[in-house]
Length: 314
Image: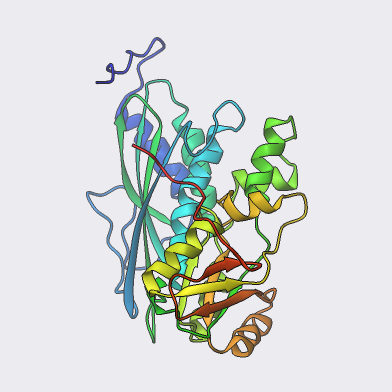
């Protein structure tokens, strides 16, 4: 059993004062007419269009971000960005974020919430409420809500035999950034930024859903793990010809590094998908290979692709 958190050594901060500052940080935007955001017992949102898409994610200091290498703002940013990426993976349009924070006494809560507010503003997914509690470690739990008008959300389980497999960008940048930061690279190094400030592929997800793709998911834990998950859900196999590796990254980082948040897509009409991307000013997705009917066939360059990537262990 963990020991209880140590009592604060500095001036005691009243919860109401802290919440007032947090509300000012996360509420720096125009609230749509008819909605109630931070400051009441619950948020009130206007009706959703089409399907409601809901996801929850958690980020833990020392697990999802090394506090010795990165400022606390980055943990807040990553927590929200990773959760919003789940909306992108469904082809959803963001509507709202709810955050719950657990932190030891003395934590710079303003900095943590500034990072969350930056991510919420960048992804147009406003923070509309949340909770705050004292605990032994810094934990940020994020719930995001989105909407999918029309044909509905894109799931993992729709990939079909003969579908082309594509990815929205080269892989390995986040893992390479962590490696470079550990070696002394600055926080503004482009690869380091990819690790500390990931960007959900929201526009790409909307374009893919508009193109009627069969299956999609974000690559959060590494292609060599997440592709197996998509294949498991769809009960198919895959044959990969090659994997696009980001400049400065290694093939191993591209396959198993994780936290790239590129979108993995299966479709029987790649030409239509590419048109949707170019029409919206997006970089065309990159072909990885194809889906096969036999679940036991899962290869890269003719060799079995091992299932590996980031996983928690208990």
